[in-house]
Amino acid sequence: MKNNRPRYQSDFLKLFLLCVAIAAPIVTWNLYHIWELRVAEDFESRCRSAAESESWDQVLSTAMQWREWRPKTSKPWLFLAEGYLESNEPQKAAVCLGSIPLSSSKAVPALVKKSQIEFDVLNLPLASEKTCLQVLELDPRLAEIHRRLIFLYALSLQKVNLVQQIRDAISR
Image 1 (cartoon, rainbow, N blue to C red):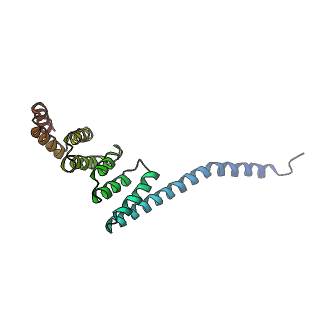
Image 2 (image 1 turned 90 degrees about the horizontal axis):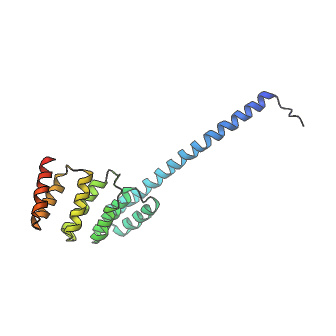
Image 3 (image 1 turned 90 degrees about the vertical axis):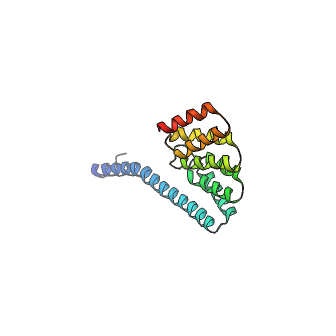
């Protein structure tokens, strides 16, 4: 059976189908990305409004849903930590702050807060020391962390560590 279409119509149809095949995944990916951004904005807005109204159970519930949806994002962990702190559950807050991906720009401030909670609230100086050392690996110039370690080493009479930490603080 012979094709009765002129050759240019057949070539045009092939070109059209090729363009659709190339464009469809690009358009689909862009639409998915836009949808994903809107969902994240919705979660953030719901968490923020619940926090402003001091509805900490709602903050925790929404942030947990957000965390389940995107566990490698820092914002749900921060809202969870805030909710737990305000609900008087500092241990859970410290776990949340330690769960923020280290690649995030929020990791260093979160770990600083975690070390403060561990030392001041939970009375876990060894855990706080470990967190402080982790912070210094990410940003060795943080004076607050150097001060905390110097205080911790002086308080616990760890002379060798104290002298080393003072030298590290001075050299930074």
